[in-house]
Length: 174
Image (cartoon, rainbow, N blue to C red; front, side):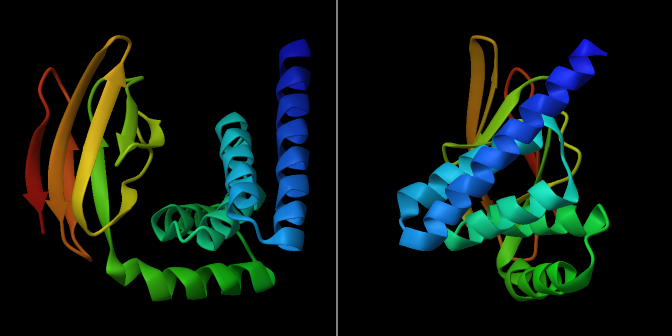
């Protein structure tokens, strides 16, 4: 019981701090404050993924022109049952931006941290493909002191599968 209470308290604290950062960012429209809000929403999302945190995370990412992260988060919020005006806004954003983006399916050793172009994107196994900007992407996996990196090229509307093992291998998907 104490663990679940601590988990809820941690999520509540992170989400509250993220909302406060978002409010500051709305007031001053400073990219550093938007980045702070995004980082806090991502931390809250790692503690507990909800449609609300996904939606807010997407909004902060969109403000920073991180459309890949925004589309991914809006899609997740929609899959978690986002409704009302928020659903309409998320759907419109995804419909507009998704065709210009690509998907990156990453598989490999459980627990490996995955980054794309130097930006942390999750830990394996991933529950869904990563949404990425089209073009050359540097994919890195790190597990303890071992890491592997590979540059892949992915076109808008397409997917690339990257399997991470002792060496990264890649196969194109249509």
